[in-house]
Length: 453
Ligand code: FAD
Image (cartoon, rainbow, N blue to C red; front, side):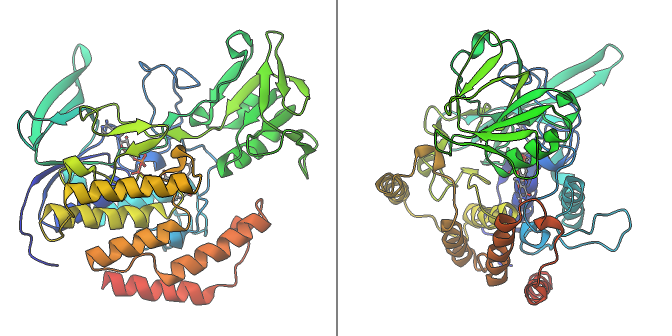
């Protein structure tokens, strides 16, 4: 590791996978790091919480937020080798209490992150149960005011202690799977049934003997619909990605149907789909995804969230005019999250210590504008700005080259394509099927040994 040039006081917001690896990289480069975490433990979304929010659609801005969207039966959707950080393999532990499966349950990811925090001595940097409520520039300076609130208790009950501090830099790692996107449904205000967002889904019991309309077509929507079908009277899945005529019974289920999107709902409880079918339903479950949300961040309009585009951000990390003292880890989606967080964190840490140069603010802004034009020319909706897909590999190589390490390894890409193929072919069983890829696991292990030695 190179000698750090500049040591700064850096606030990291969030102790999920992104915040933990950011803290490690910043510390490695000699920065003085404080990680703020509002939950009672580290791990972010992987800290399963059986509680749900008071407002089942999570629309009330004054509700108490429950961070995790993980449901009880969730098993990871990426193979564990693909999920881990580049230099800290997520491989099975020789321990009876751990889940050795290739696609383990959510608890195993939490344990992996706890091991990671312990191994790299990150725990001491974390302030638990401390929520950041305001981040803004200190007048006439590049420094940031960070206001946090910590829960305390005395004989009269619990109360909050507020603290204002000044930091040289802030790294935002607050996660993007907590603030729901909700579909607008004509007639919903007088529809008498219940509504819920999947953020508040934990177990299927509530759906027993109910007629359920589930909106969404993501991997978790598909899995939740199958789980609910095990107890519900009927499950009707509505997706906007299919043609208006779509109406099919789901193979292997006598109580589940696929529909096109909902056209409108009525005060007699009926739900009318675009395919013309009508169902009287008890509950609508919205598995409609999440929004980027930074309620604590005040940048005087420099950084905005517009139709789920966080911008302007140079390479999804630095707002040009506030760089390098404000940065974001974890904005890109549809990518190997942990490995991407690690590369982004190395870049931020290298820039803050002065080891890596950033282009001028004007050059960064030109790059952002060219990127937006390119998306527009390819008819990519604004809300897909941070969906990486194939461009994730390119970004990883670009970050790796800057940081002096490899981007996404060749074995990672090959294993990803092979497992994605199997997932598409057999979406119900891929997790428990053997895969003929011992050679890729061997390559992965060799890389891990190289990275960790
Ligand atoms: P989070 O894990 O959400 O952590 C953010 C942290 O910031 C939280 O601890 C939160 O409490 C804290 N925080 C937020 N605001 C504040 C504040 N104001 N003050 C202090 N602390 C704050 N990824 C995979 O790689 N594989 C999978 O199989 C997979 N499955 C998923 C399934 C579901 C249902 C969902 C929703 C996501 C899944 N993901 C999966 C994506 C997953 O979210 C990322 O992998 C990753 O864990 C996100 O890490 P993060 O640190 O960015 O955010």
